[in-house]
Length: 98
Image: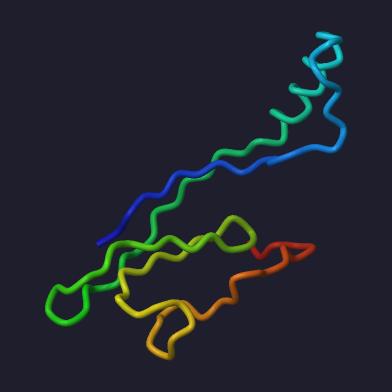
């Protein structure tokens, strides 16, 4: 079984927000911010359900380099049986693998 995940990356906040008083400056700023948005879509395998069909929902992990992993594990993140071992906080590498 697979699942298709669509998501968007971009700038969540900006220190150079010009305010709304000068419409031209605001529109130029918004265009710059919008230009950084990227649409992503990936089809990833969903692991087989455990214990003859038991599942605790679906969890999507967003990883560096626009990668994702999906699990249906009933175990909590960080437990020895949790299938995804990547840390919660990961830095984006300088160059992403192809």
